[in-house]
Amino acid sequence: MGGPLIGAALLLALAAPVRPFQLPTANHALFDKGGEERFFVGTVGKPWTTGTFGCVRSGGWQMHEGLDIRCLQRDKHGEPTDPVLATADGTVVYLSTRPSLSNYGKYLVVRHQVEGLEIYSLYAHLSEFQRDLKPGDPVKAGQPVAVMGRTTNTREAISKDRAHVHFELNLLASDRFAGWFKKTFPGQRDDHGEWNGQNLLGIDPRAILLAEREQGPKFSLLGFLQGQTELCRVLVRKTSFPWLKRYGALVQPNPRAEKEGVVGYEVALNFNGVAFELIPRAASEVKGKAKFQLLSVNEAEYHKNPARRLVAKAGNHWELTSHGLNLLELLTY
Ligand SMILES: [Zn+2]
Image (tube, rainbow, N blue to C red; front, side, top):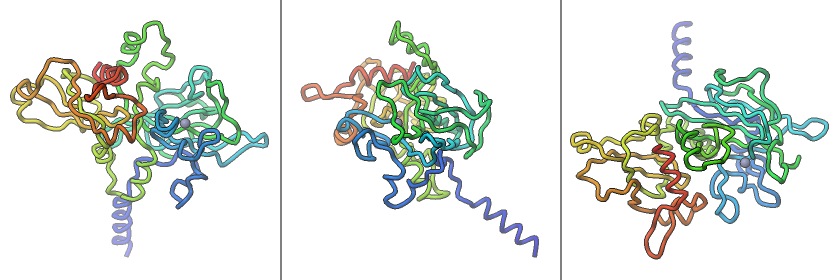
């Protein structure tokens, strides 16, 4: 009897749904029907939707790059005490310990490898980190890494009733961020090196967590990224940049370019600037010599999600804005 039973248990374990990401606190109301009010914290006087990811603030013109997850546990002074948990197995890469240096307050960044893709989770407004936690430390999914708090450097403090963890899942734009920042914003301070929020391109953690739950073992992060809605398509006259390696799985084959020689990449961007499809192009396939050439714009998506202002309409044609050009400079730096 023992043999087959153990075999069956092993098979079950192997077939168990693999969910690469987990909720970062004990608040699981995201998964309850109608549980949004108990899960998200909106901005002052605004509905819970302003605590979700996307163009959800200032009438759609301000981006919120993560989820603001409501606190469940408080001390006798009403301060949040929820343990903050690693969303997946990974490695700690950054602890920002001085709240005055960021609107994230004290924050933590963890690197994960999922299906060969590098994803960075970020946890912000923390009160403290798990004791002795430092960059390089491995963490396990669900492991406590910090305690929820209300730290921030913004003029307006986070009130006790709005206590939350700000949780992000990101792709890393470039490991040459510090150099790019110095060149692009001379004289400005970058206190966080490549762990500056500008270098982290957020994807929607809520959509990922819900898709994982719905699709079970069929969920694929690569599929999720490839399924992003296109905001625009750009030709970049660059053939070597970190994104191509870090997110090589997003590069599509093109035998013609491989045969004739690659002169650049056609890049599809979602509304938040995530390059989710890259196609190598040969000289015979491209026109013009511009470093960055806007090929097309999905107007419906622009009207739905405009906050990043990557493109704009000038008269009756579309162009890349300074924000769009900055993003492309960073992605290809
Ligand atoms: Zn937030």
